[in-house]
Amino acid sequence: MTVPFLLAPMAELSHRPLRELIEGFSGPGSGCDEYFTEMISAGPLLGGGPFESWYMDAGPCPERVVYQLVGSDPEQIVRAALLLDSRECLGIDINMGCAAPAIRRTGAGVAWMASIDKAGSLIARVRQAVKKRLSVKLRIGFEDDFDYLLNFCRRLEGEGAELITLHPRTAGEKFKRSPRWDYVTALRRELHIPVAGNGDVASATDLLRRADGGPVMVGRAAVRCPWIFAEARSAQNFTDYHGFMQKEVDLEETALRFLELLIKYQPPEFYISRARRFFNYFCDNLKWAHYVKTLLNREETLGGIERALRGYFGEHPEERYRKT
Image 1 (cartoon, rainbow, N blue to C red):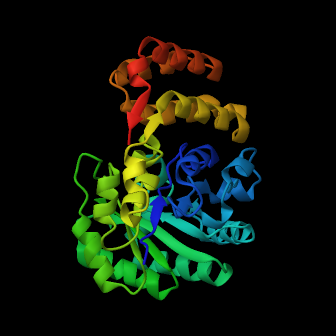
Image 2: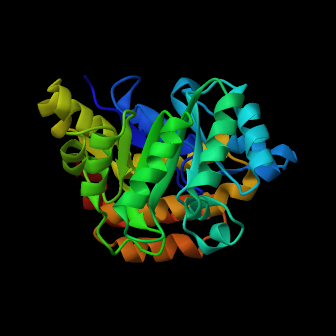
């Protein structure tokens, strides 16, 4: 049985242009199995915010897209989930893991992990409202307490959650602290539903190693290397693996393709913020990454970013191609 590969929900990154880019490397059915969207706030979604249609764009493969909802008001979350459930998608994911201070202060994200009863009640209500798959993304909690985490997850499972994704760090831990993947393994033993692991998957090799026991979610590495899913799947299936590993990725072409996709699938108000976020990771493929990031961050238009990219690769043609 093929272990699912998942794209993580990342603010200003997990949008249609990135999915289109990944699909260009992977092809249908050969790479990423599920695409989680960036967080969609329940309140603005229900209020008809001006940018909600772009957040809800599930192309190019809506049947593999999971809408992630964030919020603190149970009533709003249920109504928003019902709205998204009416669209073509794979499922609805409730964010109980975002530890950003601005999110926590509102009672959303990881704040839900403070109360097993409140979180369980929310999942029960959403489960009654929606027909598609219901999942939850969370962290260990506010303390390094596996027993609490297990009881929390058992409650969610009992209320109808069909998938749990664990980012195995506490609410207060940053990326410098290694994730506790042994907690992912332990949850997989204890629960009857799939448990996906998320955290510090930096390469196709890491992805395959983690996929030994269940679904794996990839975040920043999929922005840096949009071909990561195709590379891992080729290795896993032993289908044209040697051929793929000999393939050269044209970094300039990939970068310019991303700019084209931004223009095609995002509103102008999003162009610069999304471009800067993407190239903050993608440029790590380059020898002079910091220098290129500085160049691009000075630009205020996509045209300026394009000229800077073309200029860099023109001066450093040896940087253009990267073997997978």
